[in-house]
Image (tube, rainbow, N blue to C red; front, side):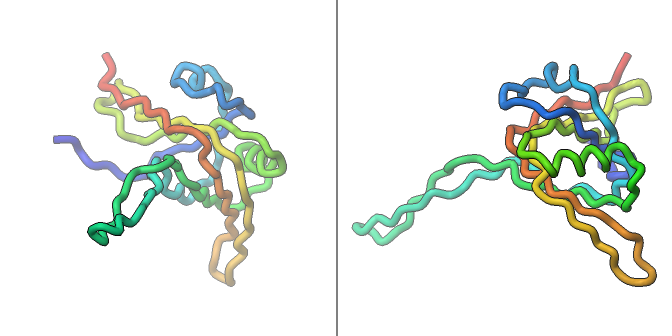
Length: 160
């Protein structure tokens, strides 16, 4: 039975603008990555099929089938830091119409000498929003990334 783990230690990185042909773990691993700093949370992402339905008049029942898959939009919430190069890269990406590479590293290595699980994908930085809040709030930015590719998973390892 596998151990559960917390999000503490999870990291997210932004890479360069990429084409739709970037879709393998080796292609993603070869890219240059910039860590996004002061991340408070990373929202959910992953495939979900749309439902295609049709009613059969003979028995009055709906028939359902899976349609196109959508990996969703994830929200990246960060504490506002204008000097963070990862946040600057997100800002620059939001100003374009290009897909960027993303890498999420989960802290779940199987042993001390192992490697953590990695999830790679392409996405559009679709929005950036500032949340000032009230007196006792930390100022935050939220970036929404529209995932435009399958999620490529590199499993955690136990190492040597």
